[in-house]
Length: 126
Image (cartoon, rainbow, N blue to C red; front, side, top):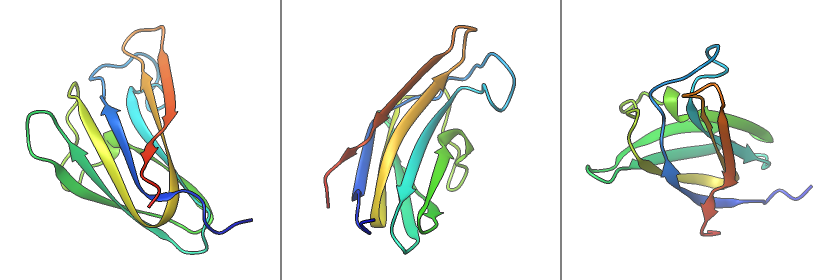
């Protein structure tokens, strides 16, 4: 398998964590998730910066994806440097020291008829 797939910078321009949820927790808690794939033989050290429409960016949130592994990050769980507020539009940028792939998923369970969306993030291929 090739040791280089993905990119070092990714952006998810759409983010929103609903404040409410329906169903058992934590499985059905409304959330935003970034799924990160690192197929390299080196750990991926990833910095996440969060952008808002009405305030300065926050970050970096730092995470590591071990070599040849995937890691799913719930934006709801990011705490340092500060929690991401609910019911607030945001965007995110991921910067990694090795190429990774980033996929975005949202579960909106504010009502019993749940909504799930998923898309590949934008990459500038650097």
